[in-house]
Image (cartoon, rainbow, N blue to C red; front, side, top):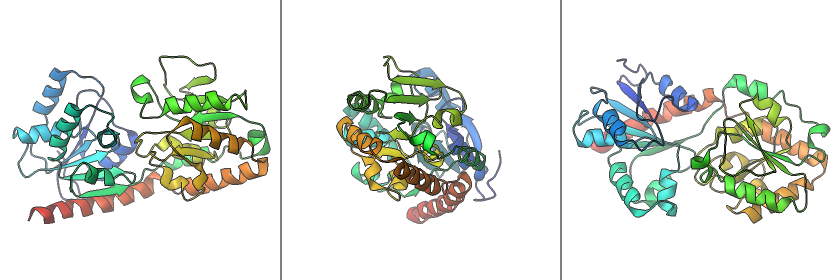
Length: 345
């Protein structure tokens, strides 16, 4: 058990599965947290879940959960962890968004709300703090941004922004891992429907989905690239699109922008805060028709205009480094812990 030099507190980082999200792990390491693995995400194995809660290590001052807030909150309800221990949850999934927008039925939402009341503080990745108020909670919170490792930024910036890449190129990228259970909140259905519309105007339009991705249904205009070098995929496309439904801050979209790819995001995708600084026309409503219209407008631009956009996206997104994001997290996490303490006085 290690003590965080940053906080002078013992912090346990609770991850939902075999491995945490790399960015979340970097945040936890920056405050010298110990790591604890729980039952795998997406596996409704009650026995595994109970075991994860029962075996949760005690004698920590702060329990930092990677979206899996129900593990420490249930443990605290049953007095399996210290009464005065703080529970802080990193919000990087669409649970709160789904509750607000009615995407889940009432019973899970009711259970989630009961358990969320037991959380002492929240760290939102992206500007999503307003969701707490919409479900009737007034818990202390901080909003941070995500960041990309500098070595990856350097690699992505090697992708050329040139005429060859942008002239008459109707390939679109989605950067990230997608399976059927994640497809809805990633907005893949909207992407596919929009491309179905746009192909009537630009028949060679194609969607490239990166990573270890798979959908139940096959489409002739969708290609799963597999786990190949990201540069080799991004260098083929002239546009990227992310139609998230509560996708908090998808780093795949930031990576696409750094690679010099103009990127359309939905109003409900966290990285719209980056896009908003570049061109508001690249922020899209959550429907296929609006996305198709924006794609069409982009495809009709001249090559010089596309290249200027690509450079603007690269310049702005390159500011979102992991180092800068971690420094921001460290400052705000300390502020959050202090605010929780003051509230409890």
